[in-house]
Amino acid sequence: MPTPRVSTRIRALPGVRVAYDLMGEGPPVVLIHGWACRRSDFAGVAADLARDHRVLSLDLPWHGESTADSPRWTMDDLGALVDAVVVDEGLRGAPMVGHSMGVAVAIEAVLAGEGTRVIGLDGLTFMHMYPRQPADRREATLAPYRDDFTSAVHALCQRASAADTDPVLTAEIAGRMAEMDPDAGVRMLGALLDWDMDAALGRADALGLHVTALAAGAMLAPEVVQAYGQRFEIIPVDLGGHFYLLERPAETAALIREALATGG
Image (cartoon, rainbow, N blue to C red; front, side, top):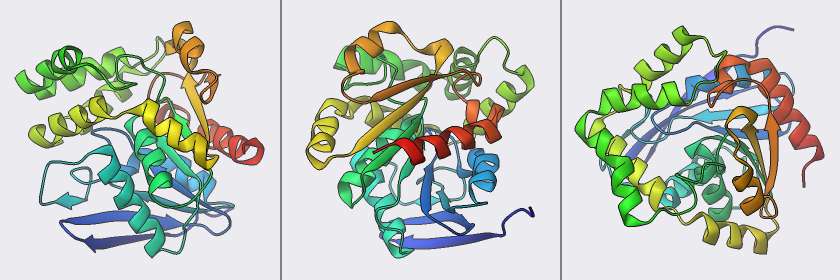
């Protein structure tokens, strides 16, 4: 089957210009990248899903090709922005797939609009990032990024790699992530640490939102399952490290299809 044609668009909204891709036909699905990443991280996954879905993947403000006037963006702000783009494209209510920070954005996007389905790729399951962090832990996490953003990003990617992750891929990912504006990057990471996941999940429960976390099995701690296994669905996967969507895109797309078919 030929690769579906990609339509790249720019949507101008107050204070921001959002770059995004549309491809394929069928039931819609929205792909949201993680912190300091970009929509191209989903390229392989999007091309696979577009064989039978209408796929929208976008760059969040200060990421990839999207620009913004202000570096201050909360998870609520980002979710509302994603919802606005989705509505403009006539895809209201589409399932949201987020990687890492993108899962928080996906939940807020659904809460800002409509829908009942969020699928997370290795997000929500790290206790040092989620739920909302106290002030001392927040500042300790941000300090290395304030001191030397590039070095901290490279160290993060090393920690997030599995034993069998290609070191060349890890270096490539870190290099792209380190291109983010450091001030905007630190502010947005701080906004993620400030995000009240427990409150968001409470609102999600009230609306019947079904959340599935496809967690990298090698990094999934038992205490996370104990603490949150009843709040959202946690499924360990064995596709690599934190960036498994780049390591194994076809298999990642297959997991997303399965979750879409069997979830609420």
